[in-house]
Length: 203
Image 1 (cartoon, rainbow, N blue to C red):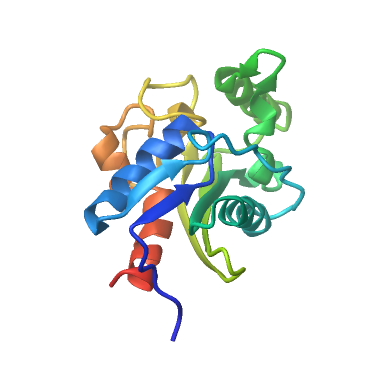
Image 2: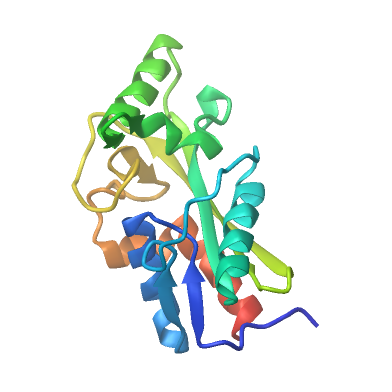
């Protein structure tokens, strides 16, 4: 029998405010209180793996060991087919500047690379999310989700975060940046992974 989540408090192993909002909202119906690694003053561990699953495990286990509580981490990013899956696990790194993360700069970089390659339309891409729940005793469970779509230019919308303003999911006319957050959360890569987590840990 796969392990269930019986605790009523969990550490979200992320310092990303956008992710924290989404995950806390997804957890609240199950009576689980989410506290962030940032609130607890935990450092961000180095993400040294080359896969979403590997980096999710690093973050979740570090938080679980530091707090004695179960921890939930999320490693996610956008994979662009014409860029051989880049930026992938390095999605946030592409936005790094000396003054913090600049996602409009990162989106511009991605689009310019597509232009330089004369990539054909539609310029398909996938948001991928791996959730890892780790317990202080070292056990963990992984849940992987994705949503597919195409990249559009120029950027559209101010909702969401990250690459949302240039990602238009399949079958939709709005980007994630234009979409009502409730609608986005219902179809996102994080929602897909969370539906699997819900089935695996709560249902």
